[in-house]
Length: 218
Image (cartoon, rainbow, N blue to C red; front, side, top):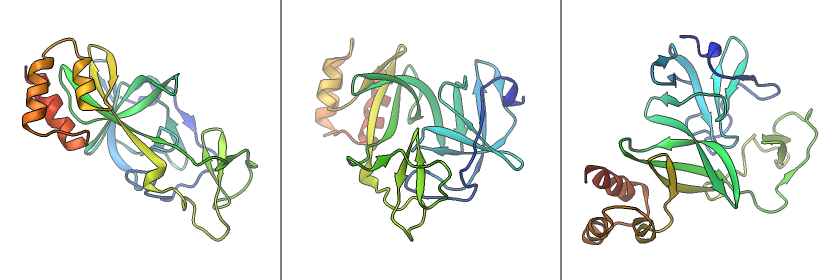
């Protein structure tokens, strides 16, 4: 199945094809993957990579690069170990639709997302015709990069804040603290509290995978 017949895609103009920075690409290189649309449509294998800075999946064409946005209609995108799903979420009181990495699947799924949090004054309305590394495109703004620096320099791990969520019955619940999350669940809160305490679980990827997997088994 040709994905272009089923999802919206956009031609990327003015951005490089070569790897830019591991800081905002989990994997710089394009990787073979598939797109799932609905319950029964699966694309043929295509070369893609996830740009977490702009929250889009870039598709390598010949020679153009296209991007698939969270609102494009793709239900799921699989890139080797990385599975992305599109979900509505809220951040700072604003509702958005974004791609989330799916860490577990089942009746209850653990999702995670890294959100870019630039320092005040980092983003500016730079000229669109400036070549890299003068500016790096970020949404509708541009990140000013110091002269003589490669594109992407200045994107540090601490510039991205990782959020964890549980998807249950179509409802997305952010997990900030384990006990607070357990208290908000409609069922099995006592069992989960005991399990979390006995196993000394904290809010990190490994422990949350363990907790949600156990929750899904109840």
